[in-house]
Length: 229
Image (cartoon, rainbow, N blue to C red; front, side, top):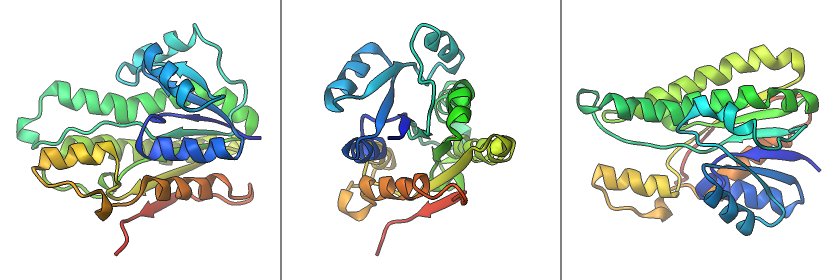
């Protein structure tokens, strides 16, 4: 039985992945931003354990975890949680830049740092669920894309740094996926939202499982997933 820590388990890709891992009996640790959210996750995913830490305040994660029990071994850490605020660079406030960079890039880096002892103990696997915006950026996507390009850099550096410890690092780049975040994006774009046009979150979760389940003699470093025809 493998042990996994997942962020963003409450909806979308994170929830789909958590459901699949729970169905096969793996041990789950789920990150929640506060105690109320943690209670909801434990109720939804019976048997799961929770850690409380706010990704919007990455500098406080170490303090928060210092007051909680942590997993001693982790077979995987999967970063799914993220936020998006669209807008042109000329009209984006410092607060908006900082919030997206904190949640999408700095917090995953800090969470990874804090969990490295447990990951190294299991020769584990770190998965960053990035975005198509981590490969190519369009107008109004500059701040979000910058945070996702940063995640790409973190993953690429970490992959080489942690190879001597036996860790694998995978970045997944989903295209538009039918999640609450995508619905918000459509609202910001002023476009009608039709979930049937986009990738099912379960399909992205299946892609993540393919990377996690690969035998230890190989590593999937990057995976790009796009909506079908």
